[in-house]
Image (tube, rainbow, N blue to C red; front, side):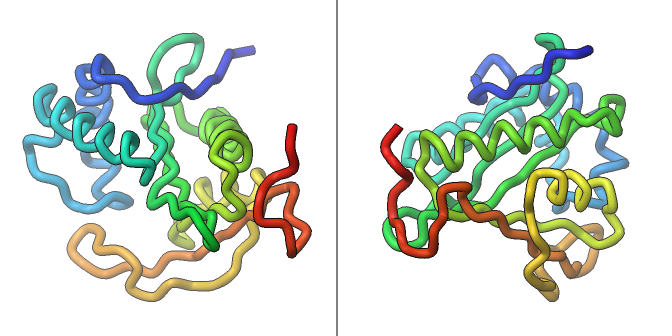
Length: 184
């Protein structure tokens, strides 16, 4: 059995992430927005990580990497964190193609939900997946996400605007009234 953990993104992750993104470039063009060539370089990933870490420092994001047996195999993030009456964010994740289909993304998403509903004290997590991405839909459903609608023209991928299924999960402590999670 493998050991799957997530940890906060670090500047030292740039080389490995660049290598993984280069390896998945053709695959990702079907699922991710178009990116400049520089994104796939070590220095491009270093720049992207710096931008992401600024968002994390501001409290607008939590970003991490996915590790299997200590080796970096993917990314996971809680994006667009909103506080006050919303207490929500949006989940994003990616596991490099050589590691997919083994439950790694499902476990990474589960651990990200612990962070969202635990230390971040959020009430709701949204996630989006294209209908034809059955694997991503399964990751969300296995983590207790429910389909709540269709977001038409949600994201521009591979030359056109794509629809996404919108998923949502409420905190396990949600009672319809409480603003804050119960004290631990």
